[in-house]
Image: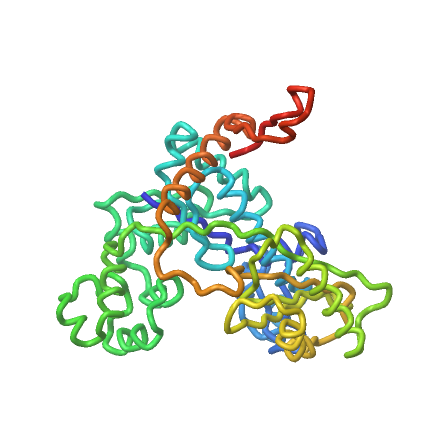
Length: 393
C-alpha cells in the first residue's frame, strides 16, 4: 500500500505566510514578475466568485473586483517543500518526491512504527499543520495519486477491488499531469472519444501497444491500477545554501558579480560539503517588489572550481528582473567530484543503506537517544570518561 501526499495550495499558503490577509478577503497569488499577466492559486472565497488558477488578471478582477493579489514566492515554496520531505524522511518513512508539493510514501514501515493507520495519518498531518494536506492510499503509484486528488477533508483509501471503479470517471489528461505520459497520447485519445480513464482501461493491451508503443502500455497499466507500488526513496541531501543580505539592494552587474563570488566562496568552504561537488547551481533572490525569483544553472559534470561555477551561473543570474534585497545560492545534486561514477554500487552499500533506514525508524519511534554507538575520543586520557563517547550510528 502506498500513500500519496498532495499540497495543492502550498504556493498560496507560503505567499500568505509572508503577507497575511484577513480570512474574509478573496486572495490569489499574483503573476510572476515580468511574465504573463496570469494569476496563480486563488483562495476558496475567490474560487466561489469564478476565479481560477491561470486566469488572466483582467478577467479575474472583472469577476472579483475586491480580489487581493499577494506576491508569488517560488523560493519559499521550494524551501518549504524540501523541509517537508526532510521531516517525513526523519519519521523513518521511505519517501519519494515526485514534484513540488507531491510525494509518495511507503505505508508499511509506518504502520508498524506508529501502531496503525490512524496514528500514522495523524503524524503526517502534524508535519504540515499550516497547509491543506490531501492524503490518498491505494495499491499502485498512479491510483494513490488519484485517491489523494479525490481526498478533501479526510484521507481516501482504496483497495485492489476499488481502484478501477474509483479512477474510471477521471480524465485521461491526468495521465500526463500525474503519470508522465506524453501529452500527444492524451490528445490522441481525446480525439477518438476516449476522454476517461475507464475507456482506456477497457481497451485491449495489444491494440494500445500497437498504436502508442511502450508509453501507451504504461498509460494503460496506470488506468487499470497495475503500474506497481515500487518507489525510489529520496535521501535528503545536506542543505548547502549561503545567503547574503546586502546593505543596499543589488541593482548593478558589478554588485551581482561580487555577491555571487562571495556566496560561492562560502559554499565551497562549507565543511559539510566534504568532497562532494554540485551538478546544479540554484540562485534564489528576493526582489524589492516583494516577489522572489529563481534561476538554475545545470553543469555537465560535478565541478568544484569556483571560476567555472561563477561563469556557469552569471549569464542566467543577469536575467534578474528587479533589484534584489536578498540573494542566496544553493548547491544541488551533489556528486563525488573528480571521480568516474560507478555503474554498480560497491559490495555492502545496499546493506549499509538498509541499516541506516532501520536506525532512522528506531530513532523516530523511540527517540534520538535510543540507538547510539561508542566511539574513541582520547584513548590516552587519564580520565576514563574522556576516552570514549556516545554518538548516533
